[in-house]
Image (cartoon, rainbow, N blue to C red):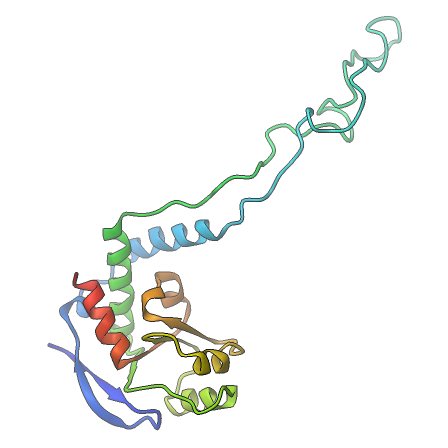
Length: 206
């Protein structure tokens, strides 16, 4: 069974963590596509809207008589053929969200974790704690573990760490229960605490 080093905030090895077989399996890139597409679709606001001829302002009276003017027949100034007329087949508010099967979501997440292990981008820390919510504090830790862009995953709420990390442009802090495929692929490193890693393994083996 493969292992990964457990580091402290000084980038020194303090132990080792045995990885379950799910983290060393085949990386199924097709599951990445299906899952990320679903996540991005669910983020769409779906508020785009256009007015049909029923909602465009303007009189319902016929603009001129049917015959004798030499002009084309017209029944309403709200016609889509006219300037300021209604829009045909335009977008209307809708819900773009949908879901993929649980097995697909789980498989994509496992493949994402396996990819981080394969590329040597998994960094397990024994703990991440700060005495005060200062961005320079978390930056000092990230610099010592040689990470320039990463997803930080912890177990449980940590207001101090949350305040310190919220201004970081190249890092994102997540609770282990909120880990997702899009963020896993977006950031180079996966920086996760030992407790969060153990909880993640239990969640994936249910």
